Length: 139
Image 1 (spheres, helix red, strand yellow):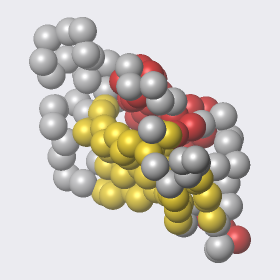
Image 2: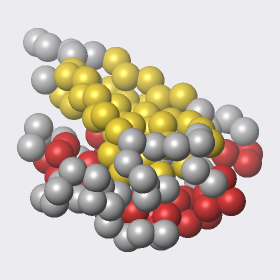
Image 3: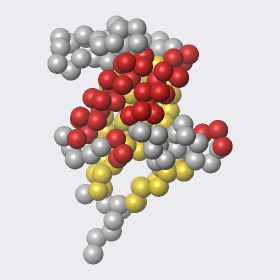
């Protein structure tokens, strides 16, 4: 009999509840998926074409939609994401990014571990945010 995959999310600090899991543990056989930086760049357009110019919320929604599509090609969903690293040009835009992330995860009680980093620039001019995701699925 094979061991089942088990994921657990923990939030110890009161202020982190509803924002992110401080740690996610994964036990058992599984496959790790690492999604490289995904932002507001249009996958179907010319390289560097950015959707939702000037709109962090729009770019973040678009990025999570693209991540969902990529995950689906590998038999995964956003519910399988265990870690997000988000890069924002302007941390004052965090509420707009957070709103898009909350909508993408449907205010799930199993919110992935999350790190937010302020950066001076991203891959393409006009990008306001970018996300890296790590997911795990049962073998």
